[in-house]
Amino acid sequence: MRVFVTGWNGLLGTSLVPLLRHAHDVDGFGVEDGEVTDLQFVRARFERFKPDAVFHLAAWTAVDACEAEPDKAFRVNGEGSRVVANEAARLNARVIAVSTDYVFDGEGTRPYTEDDAPAPKSVYGKSKLSGEEAVAGVADWAIVRTAWLYGGGGRNFVDTILTALDERGNLEVVNDQVGSPTYAQDLSGALVTLLEAGAQGLYHVANVGEASWFDLAREAATLTGRNPERIRPATTAQVPRPAPRPAYSVLDCTRAATRHGIRLRPWRNALADYLASPSKADQGDAR
Image (cartoon, rainbow, N blue to C red):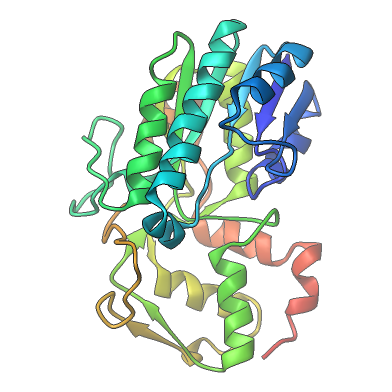
């Protein structure tokens, strides 16, 4: 297939594109090439490549910055998704968009399924839900919600926490926000499966298991030879942030498993692989 990827050099795109290239013709753009909200730019790139499918990864994911600049958040995450979905539909291309667990309010006590009603609290979550609605308005679409994404393609919590631990010595990390840590490489494999299966509709895809940010930080410290005791638990109230976060946003991924055999490995196994990758090898001796 001819597959176009928006945001192809971001955190997820840098894992997805090499996998796609094993079997498909791939093109795409990043933020340095043009704006996802620019209709003429997107139309020109699509018409030149004539994709059979479009992965829409481009997004503004800075949660606290979105809270401060809601107009930009809705422009990029909402209107940008509308432009991409409509232009893909105009060429009869399927669009597969990636969304987030932040579309939920986090007040639940069990993993969220695709049938649970979204109720985002943050501007980021609301803008991503707006993007979902835009994508679901075309004929041939799939939306994949994931959570707590990390990987080698960009800034992420795992790398940030390890750097902060080295620079500051001791950290406080919240232990009352629980979600589904997800490795971009694993998610990318699932996205390729969904593409090649012709999947349509809404799916949740994340690594198996749940963790708090505190759990994730301590596991990362342990796996890289740092002292996990230097990371102390804190409540959200003790470490306030501008944007509200879901207290519990674990994703139920049964639909992807049942329909397409997609079962990502446990999050601890995935994290260990990420931290053992060549790009991380030089961090292992840090204390």
